[in-house]
Amino acid sequence: MGQFILSIDIGTSACKVAIFDRKGIVIASVNEGYPVYYPKPGYIEQKPDEWWEATCKGIKKVLEKGNVTPDQIVGVGVDGQSWSAIAIDKEGKVLFNNPIWMDTRANDICIRLNQEIGADQIFSVAGNPLQPSYSTAKIRWYQESYPEQYKKIDKILQSNSYIVYKMTNMASQEKSQGYGLHCFHLQKGIWDKEMASSLGIPMSFLPDIYDCHDVVGGVSDECARQTGLLAGTPVVAGGLDAACGTLGAGVYANGQTQEQGGQAGGMSICTDLYTASPKLICSFHVIPDKWLLQGGTTGGGGALRWFEGTFGDYERELAKTKDSSSFALLDELAEQIAPGSDGMIFLPYLAGERSPIWDPDSKGVYYGIDFNKSKAHFVRSLLEGVGFSLLHNLEEAEAVGAHAQMLRAMGGAANSRLWTQIKADITGRRIEVPSSDTATTLGAAILAGMGIGWYTSYEEAVKETVKVTRVHEPDMKKHEIYQKNYQTYRRLYEDLKETMHKK
View 1 (cartoon, one colour):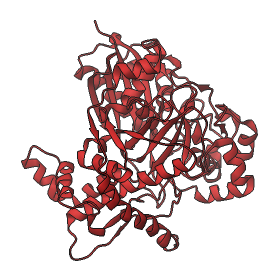
View 2 (cartoon, one colour):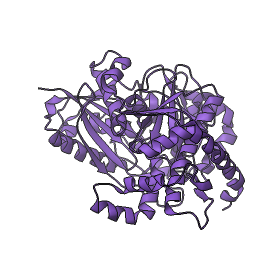
View 3 (tube, one colour):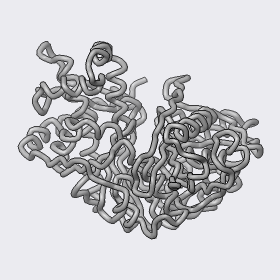
């Protein structure tokens, strides 16, 4: 009888549940979707209880789909989206909807705290600027907006630690998600009591800190009843989705780099030494004693998803008559247009922007529209605009000494050969593509495998499980073409910034 790891990924649009064997082969995988709510401008939130409902459904379905019995599951790994602030009371009840990583409602709170405490002082501890998308300001927003409910808070959890809590009844905070809280000392990996006090965050809210592969507890009887898992099955702390995806893409050593093509875009450079930049994102890797210098953008694969949902009616209907998808048909459109999109440029700031400009008021822009432009130009320039945002982050990383020579692509966008080649040509870097759709859940599974002793090292785990499926070499002639558009891309934001900020 085989033994398997169950992996849970709490993404922005859906929960993915997968079962892996020791070789990293997917036995079965299912997706369970849930809504994103937009109650007001700048408010983008989800309901953690709906994550849990989707998780329970997904686990039952994947066990059935894979013909796997509960006793064959020997460990559970969980990863999740960044910068949650899930407030629970002593009974584990969620007190507020969770503002997700795109939410900017706490911008004024950030401005005030940066002035009162000092932005440099905060950065010296947290290694990250205090911005509204992080967990810190969301906690203060709860306090100022709902003071009576705030008094009921027992613990603040991240997306993955909330699922771990629902499975084990144990509150935890693993290191890779610690960077969302600016009272987490990013060099030492501990809570900084003095900064917590300055930020007005009670230490009682902060769970014990775990390494990402640490076993937090076993599946509880209640979880077993809801999911069909065996009570006592080990559950590890898990980690940040981007960090798990980085591991699942095979990035575990200094200088190796992941290129992210999920809902969000960006990159993660693995470093042996703590390297922070106020323009980028720094976190612990899910691997002990490693850090990730990250670029995180709002307009990754989600930009194309927005375009397809808004302008892709024809492609959706056409896909029904072909053995294809609407996204593949949009790729075919974009291929009709030469690199550079005949001067058309897209700024992918569809929910403001995170790194490196950190501007919640920035807006998405199409520039260069004229009577000669077609729908194909709009698609191609969107793909290129996301590539420019990747290059912008890579350049900021180089400025602080973190160099990415080759990228490992992951996420749904990596399934597009065209988009991946565009990114290679824009950045001038070789891109390798492992099994992109499973990189994140595989990373979480590797953590569980380390926790239960399946693997003796992360190097062994990666060599055992990660296989490159294709390679994209940059075309340097096209790279030169893209450089002109990239310079315009950079100028456009600077020229339009003042207009974007007008209310």
